Length: 123
Image (tube, rainbow, N blue to C red; front, side, top):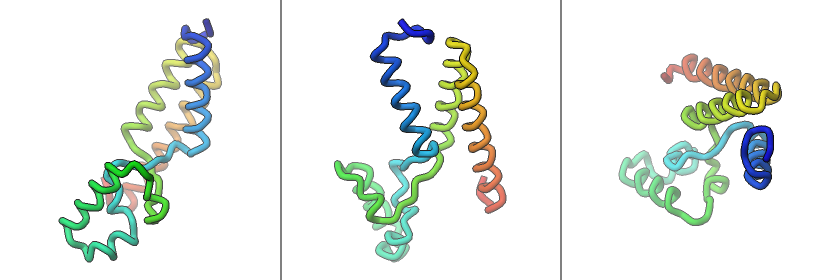
């Protein structure tokens, strides 16, 4: 058993996931982000139904087409909240300062993103 009370295999998988998430900068694609593509905005001619079609196509596609369509990765508020909560739980269980530091970094990223959205007029 490790310090956070899990089996070695689960702890190793969680550590790899943390490393991957941090390497991605806490960013990722959203199932409904097809309309963030500048290319798709032109291809749909701003037609709502065509946009919905693309959203569903990308959402259910077994192949990730987002890079080909220039859809940027972004921050997901719910995902960020879950990451922050997981770091807090790990810190409380293991008592290792690295988890508190990672949580604070994630919180700083989230606060910076909130400021950018407010400055651009988005809630």
